[in-house]
Image (tube, rainbow, N blue to C red):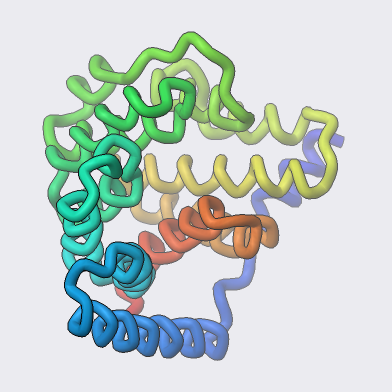
Length: 240
């Protein structure tokens, strides 16, 4: 039974259809134009910067996304510690030390969320190398939602990708919960392969994350992370 589940999990999913992709990108471009007009009329429109930053990021315009998120913090300093999107955008814009700082200060805002610790590891890895990134892994004393405790052990060197996926296959879960865990597992296994330079392995897992039926429409956070997987896959495959 376990072998069957793993076989199903590891099947190659179909990519996002060309029609859906074209429509999504068209809508993002239109949203950027609309929000730019709003900002031109009101340069202090904080929510317009937030939404335009999201649209820029989803469009693969990472530096512009990071700049809009920075503007948000300039307008409202209380957003500084909790602005995880700024950290992700800085990572993709190549501002690795800034990204690492964002995820470090986020830990003062939420010291349970291991997903934040993963992004700090990625940022430290790109800025300073694997040895320093592993040495600097944030420590967590409290429980977190699954599959992040298991996924975090991947970065600590205590579990392999196959063991992370096996734990999901072995668990008694609803279909929705299984898809949720698989989404995050494939996303972060794929991103780890990418950070370490294993593009082929990264692409396979990121395709599974993008094809996952749970993430899109499951709330703001999962939807944003679905786009993270999608844009990283675009970077790997050279898709415009």
